[in-house]
Length: 76
Image 1 (spheres, rainbow, N blue to C red):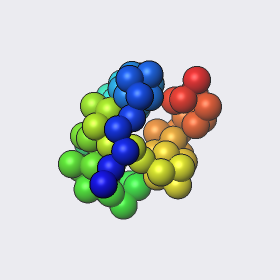
Image 2 (cartoon, rainbow, N blue to C red):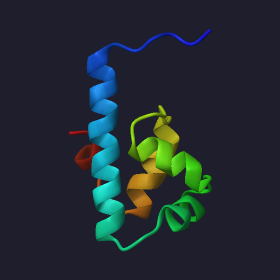
Image 3 (cartoon, one colour):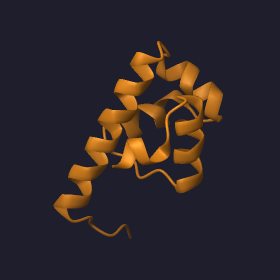
Image 4 (tube, one colour):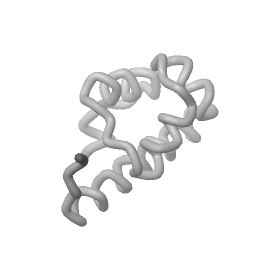
């Protein structure tokens, strides 16, 4: 059974997702193309951007690299 996340975690996840979305749009990439670059489904990218998914560190590192942005910039 999934554990309920505290509100501050959900809020931070949404903020990080918004940063990913902004960086993706700045790089002129679609969710589909970013998904291809990181070997993830575009639906996964959508869920990450809107804070409804909790991506692992490996996927976050791949996303940061594909967007040519330091991971620290996305999670600051």
